Length: 376
Image 1: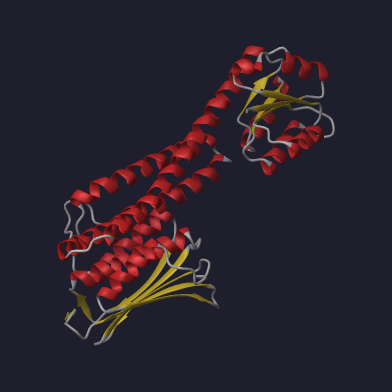
Image 2 (image 1 turned 90 degrees about the horizontal axis):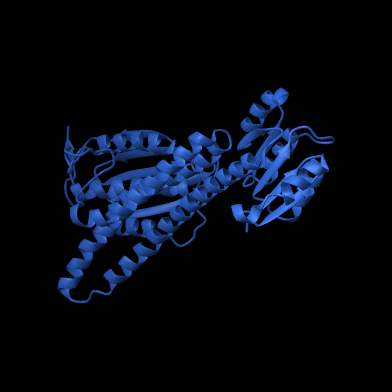
């Protein structure tokens, strides 16, 4: 049900616009009337209103003051201003503080109807895009556990071998697509904030984020046939099995800082090159998972990364300034990460920190079983 409110201190204007226009024919189910800003706010407190059409000059509270209050109390409500020629500068101010547009008085019925229909079209488009994004995100969250459940159903040796390969693919899907979706969600939140100040730019950013979400879901299907040892930051045609761990981490950190607007301080001091592909992949996937969880679930904006090793053990520590880990059961991504590290004989730890507050992921991998560091 779409609700429209008309606000003007001239009762005959309100009565005319509210009753002589066949609003249901144009997609408006209910029309409320108010003759002052305070009266309009009282009605808004009682029930939601989709569109408010308000005069700029009213006693007790001006149209600009009313629009500011509505933006604060009910950001989802669209405001349309009615103004005279002498008040054009006020109309520009109204748009800057959140009004979707303005009409010059005396307003003709046809102009008002067309303006309201444009607003309804934009609202419907925005709601559809938001619903589609949520549907795609829910689909991904439902699909990954289902795929893992199918893997666990394998029993024979051949099925177990296939299970291991499929588990790897599921993990790679989570790493590649999950990271892309995190960047997309951050962009969606930024678009929502931008809509309050620059609606055109905000809608453009929202459409870009929606396209990114659809592309991410397409990547799930494509990955099954083409995914290999890929790492963030490598473009098509580049080496897909690199051996420079420090270079990979540096490349990933720069890309993450640009994609999700975070800062990653890094300190790396290895005595030589890491040459074990399995170890490299496990560490890079763990780094992606740590950053993704810190941004999405912890609200982190600052990360500190430390990588060092001695002749027996390699250590990766990733701290962030987000909400501390509450000890809850790890999700799908963290479980995959823990399994990868365990297969290499390593261990992981995730805990909250104090002074400063935050969360820290620690990974320890043995180096004594085989030589994994080549001397420079």
